[in-house]
Image (cartoon, rainbow, N blue to C red; front, side, top):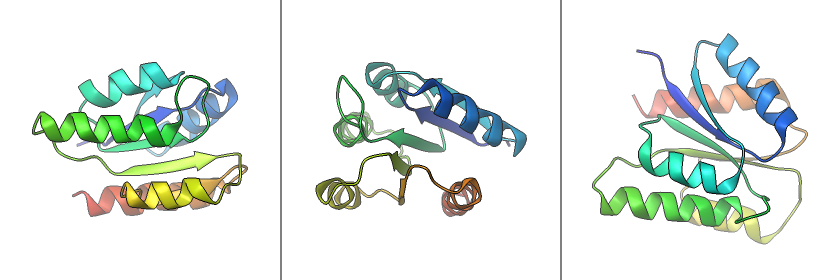
Length: 127
């Protein structure tokens, strides 16, 4: 069965590049171009993995994933592994991400092979 990935980022170039990369690897990719759209899709879609940007205009990715996880838990839906991506170095965000159970935290610009390796490893854990 094809694995489904939700990609949440406010940068259109990142969305386009990662969608192309992930689709070429055989994954089904659902895009969210803004935090609010990502929040709604994270709550309603059945996905195997979420890749989420940390810094977005409406709400940051850490808070977005907190809300998605809380909603899914309250609705007795399975937890979804998360990989955070960001272009901004921060001391607090990686710590918060780990507390949330993030499986990986990658700084942009990241090596695409490293991202793919993380995606494959995390989807293998969820099998």
